[in-house]
Amino acid sequence: MPRNQQVLLDNRPQGEATTGNFKLVTTDTPALQDGEVLVRHHYLSLDPYMRGRMNESKSYAASQPLGEPMIGGTVGEVVESRNAKYAVGDKVVGMGGWQEYSVADGNAPGMLRKVDTTHVPLPSYLGAVGMPGVTAWYGLVKIIEPKAGETVVVSAATGAVGSAFAALAKARGCRVVGIAGGPEKCRYATEELGFDVCIDHREHGDLKAMSKALKEACPNGIDGYFENVGGYILDAVLLRANAFARVAVCGMIAGYDGQPLPLQNPALILVNRMKVQGFIVSEHMDVWPEALKELGGLVGSGKLRPRETIAEGLAAAPEAFLGLLKGKNFGKQLVKLV
Image 1 (tube, rainbow, N blue to C red):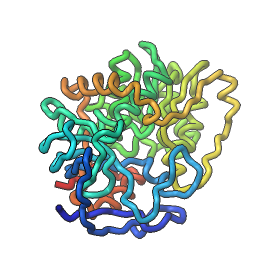
Image 2 (image 1 turned 180 degrees about the vertical axis):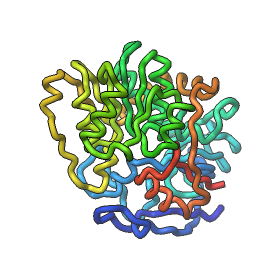
Image 3 (image 1 turned 90 degrees about the horizontal axis):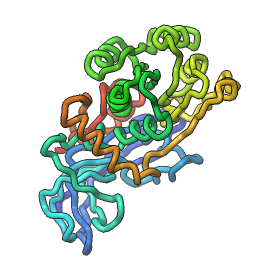
């Protein structure tokens, strides 16, 4: 059996996460039991939610255990199988974690899924046609429920979720406004992703400036907002929200270091009769087939052309992950393992 490199969570962050929270080890790959498959990972997905799992605190999911490989989505190839549903050579997506190989129970619901790479590249199943894409789809379609002509806004606009959100919202006839960091990302948002406008939060770094920028970008107000960041950006959106606006709360990356993110004027939620709903996409597996079909069509037709930032080798994962939390990535952050 092949030797397996893994990145473990060695200790919990005290405030900001560092590379010292992780440990790179090499271990043996266990022998397969009946029903199991051995997957060699080609790519590992890095996502902001992982930062919250590193803390030992109340959340929507259990904390990442110490001394075990970090949680994470993976795509790869079956290299050994003791399950009739999977053959050697099958391309699969799963939650293999921060390691080069994983053993999966091929009979467990949701553990592993075969994918077709004829029209959709393998890495896309970790981004636009995977969990981030379905996240964008659910927040837009099921919570914001946009109508043609409405204005929708998304923060972290050029990431894996934001880029899918733009394509999905444009397909529904919306005016789509993004918020991203830096002129290069904002150009990419408008020139390649189809955003009508993109606001550079680095140039509008406080509530007053962001509110003014949103007023200019959204002359008819904001009908729907997809929240990935929190902080003053959410405060600014609430100031510009229309009556009966809907907010899908997906992430609060501004608060992942454990500091509270107070709202300045929560009364606006009442004044505008707004719907504000948090969600976890893994709790809505029933919509995944419908969402993946639409997302796969957008990628296959070229209407959604997401970029990827790729780190090389498992040892590069911790540094790439910390860069993701600071917005250093461009599009989906992946680690190439093969």
